[in-house]
Structure formats: C-alpha cells, structure tokens
Image 1 (cartoon, rainbow, N blue to C red):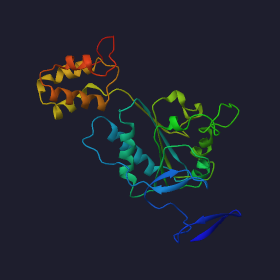
Image 2 (image 1 turned 180 degrees about the vertical axis):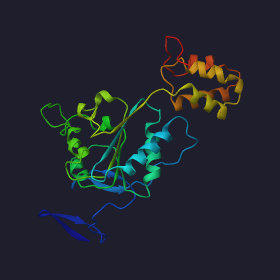
Image 3 (image 1 turned 120 degrees about the horizontal axis):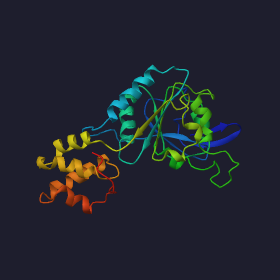
Length: 271
C-alpha cells in the first residue's frame, strides 16, 4: 500500500502493485472514468467469436489491418464506419481487432470522460475503438446547452491529427448517423482516412445465407424478392426471416413479411 503523489496531491493506493510503465501492455482494455481521470481496466468479455461471415466485412477488415501495418509510424490512421444497425460495422471492427490484438494494445471507449483527450494524447502504436461514437460524444464537454463551450468531438480533433504527440495509432469510429458528426471529421482524409458506408445487404448475401440455412430451398428466390421490398436488409433481418420460415414451413415468404417487424418500401422491389 502507498500514497501516490501526483502534482502535490495524494491518492491512496491500496496494494503493492504500483509501477510506472512507459507503454500500455498488449491486452484488450476498457477506458473508464475515475476521480483521478480515465483509467484502463482489462476487458475480459470482449466478444471476438463469430460464425460464417457474409458480405464484405472481412474484406474491409483485411484492408484496414494492412493499411495500419503500412501506415507511417509518425501519423495516426483514422477509420470511420457508418450505416444502420446490423449491417456489419461492429463486426468489421472486431475482425480488425482479432488480427491485431496480439501485436498492439486495444482500448475500447464507450463513454465520454474528462481527461480522455489528454490520455489519448500520450498513446503510441495502439488501437482505439469508439463504437457508436456519435451517441456518447454528443454535446459539449460540460453536458449543457452552451454553444460557446468546446464540444466533446472537438477535443479529439488535434488527437486524431497527431498534433498532441500521439502517433502510430489506429482509431476505429462507428456511427449510425453521420449528421451528428462534427463537420471537421468529414472529408478530411488527413484526420479520418477511410470512410466505409454500410448499406443494405445485397441479393447475393441473402441468397448465400438461404443456401446455408433455409430448409426449403425452393423458397430462396421468393425470400430474395420479398426482402428486396424492405427499406433495408441487415444480417439480423435475414437470419430472423429464415429462422421463421424454418419454424413454420407452411408459411410463404410473403406471409412472413406481412406480419414481421419490417419497414416495407412502397416502391418497386430493389432486387
């Protein structure tokens, strides 16, 4: 046990495991707020397991990993992944982390906290994931309506640029709605180099999933056409739709669509 002296202020440390490390150890960490500022704690339940991958998430993840490994060590690499729920944004980030976790520290941030930008400013050669970035990084740093105050997103602009001294980091930002992003994050490749937009899964993905999982293969074309009449198609929608047809084989795809929780287009089919 010890008293930790930080700039003249004492903090009680209940334990002997106090040390000063020059870098973050390789592990998957979660950033959490404390009275002393942000701290990292091991994130043991971070999910990396997955089944068969449909769509382009693996290809995108592979490109991000290759680009990061080739990235100039003096600069950060920012990646933005945007689009609706269930379209593969989070899966892509997990596929990236799956390939990098043995070589780099991984930090997962899911809430804003005072001192976060300062903490990030001292990192090098680290992967930082901010899932649903626009939700917890909304508003100003004081959490009020004062538009003259610095916003939470503004605190990260210099960090992403590498102007604070941090370098060689990979920032993965997922968002559902880009209109909630600071305008200085859009069309700024020096800050955010890649922007992957996730739209509706196409007919080939629906068909491939049905070939693997739909019991009655004679319904595949109807499933493709029926799901093509919805506003957008995610893997969650596809798997739930196929599961319903397997449980109730007497139903047609049109029957399922008529009572399923789907936003149906009034225009012609997309597929």
